[in-house]
Length: 175
Image (cartoon, rainbow, N blue to C red; front, top):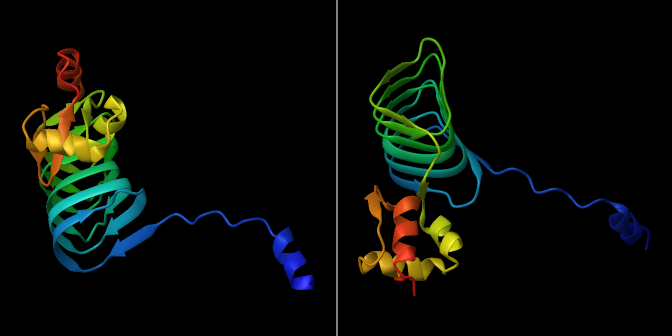
């Protein structure tokens, strides 16, 4: 009985923040739907989709289309980056590609070659559109595949512009 009472008196443990370090050479698509801290220290080629914080280490070389919430680049990246919240280019970073983010911090010494689009993020993914329109995700995907809803393919993901979704919904085409 003493064990039970001690266990009952303990406070529940808080869930630990998920974290993954990649120190290898990889290619393909990495997609995380749940928030995670992902750090890439090796070479990666493909598509990266990350919720949470993505860090590209100083020794890393990444050739990919990257989408994430918060992205920190300290290594070399060749490809477009869409940071939904913020992008930080550290002094050791070399980025060749276009970026889209509402907040950008380029630290002295960083090298960036490409185009930058800043401002309020008016793009949504399938889950965002499903919540916005109050329709389940599979139904949104079905509308996309039938060409009935305005969407653009970026890498392996569908991107929706809020203004186009608003106009589409205003026409009464929402089922």
